[in-house]
Image (cartoon, rainbow, N blue to C red):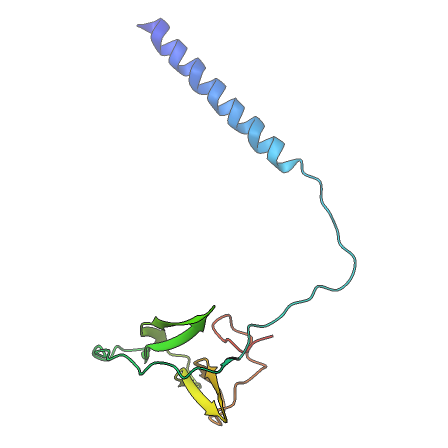
Length: 138
C-alpha cells in the first residue's frame, strides 16, 4: 500500500517536472525584430458592390434594456454573396449616438455603411475615437 502511494507520488513528480521542462523549453525562443514601421490598415468603412441587398428580414425587437441599444439586423456583403447578420444589443456609450448599419445607393453602386458610435451627432464617423468597437478607427 505504501509502495503504491510512493509510486503514484513519484509518477506525479515526474509528470510535473516534465511539464516544467516543457514550459522552460517554450520560453527559450528566438526573437526576430523587423526593421521599419508597422503598417496597420483599418477595416473598410464601407463595402462597395453593384448588387442591391435583399430586402431586410423581419426581426422582432426585444423589449428595451437599461444601458443598452438595439443594433438592428442587416445584410453584409461577404465574399460573393449577402449574409444576414442578426440584430444584437450594444452597450450604451455615454455622450455618443449609435448609427444603425445601412446600405446607401450612389448611382449604380451600393455601399454598406457600418453601424457605429457618433460623438458629435453629425452622422460622420469620428476618426479620433479609437475604441475597438469603432469600425472607423485607424
